[in-house]
Amino acid sequence: MPDPILLLVDDDPETLASLASALERRFGADYRVLTERSPTSALARLEHACERGEDVALVVAHLWAPEMTGLDLLARVHDLCPRASRCVLVSYGDGPAYQHVRRAFVLGQLDTYLLKPWGDPEERLYPVVSEILGSWARSVRPRVALLHIVGERWAPRSHEMRDLLERSSFPYRFYSHDSDEGQRLLRDGGHAGGLPAVIFGDRCLTDPTNLEIARMLGVKTEPDGGLYDVVVVGAGPSGLATAVYAAADGLRRFRSASSSC
Image (cartoon, rainbow, N blue to C red):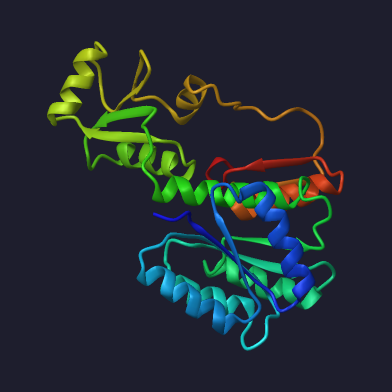
């Protein structure tokens, strides 16, 4: 199977070449970085790739592309390749663009955005692209479970835990308490209490709170003291992009998952 595709679409040949070169240097060992200047040609290329069963990891499109807007193109991308991540490229100072981008986020038509020029790719470009490619890989590729949950399948608390771990992209597996594997895990862990049980290595917690799970995993649960210039609510790729741009401008920022606020 060939490497997953990272497709860039921009009618500006200099921007396209610069972006392709930067991404090829960092991600070329694991992804095929392809370019198209025409949205129509890009869609045809994606259609052929999906028909052959090739993976499309990310499509980056300039907002004001010819023939159709970048957002229209990305909507078509979702129809062709539902698992592909979508990123729009916006120029600094393009005021009218921000309203369109915000609306696309609200409607779920966009995963993240990039601002051009991006300057040193280590500061802005690579962190955003790394995050979204990581999210894509976690969603489509098999993962080794690090955390095991044993509980009643339809219990509200079991659902809450699974939802939390899914949104955090943390590798886990859920086992029904009356399944053979679930019973084995409870016996091996010496668990005789209530459910759900959360097992991490040789540790087993009985119906823990989210805070107890986070502490067991070694997650930092309290922000540093002092004042923050920017607070980003939402820990997905778009939240990371906002935090990256704030950091590049020297702002002190705090980033939180929406459910923790």
